[in-house]
Amino acid sequence: MNDIAQTAQYIVSSILPENAGVSMTTRDENGTLVITISALPEFIGQLIGKEGKVIKSIRTLLNLAYPEVHYLLEIKE
Image 1 (cartoon, rainbow, N blue to C red):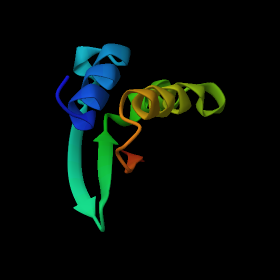
Image 2 (spheres, one colour; image 1 turned 90 degrees about the horizontal axis):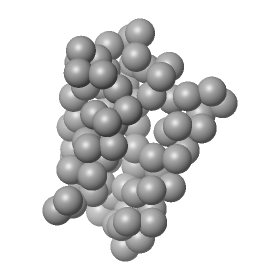
Image 3 (cartoon, rainbow, N blue to C red; image 1 turned 60 degrees about the horizontal axis):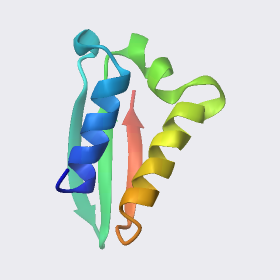
């Protein structure tokens, strides 16, 4: 993986099925990379997980892989 956005795309596409309609956008706001994930509404719960455990795990993996990158991971409903 070359950058944090590609890694996030890989992880999310591995969790959700192909028909989930996953798309990601990135933008830079004042030195912080904002990664926005959108998917079909019926798959958002699967991405978040019970008590937010799945999305927290994704953030943990990204923090470990890219400790020097300041980012914000958003889920667009």
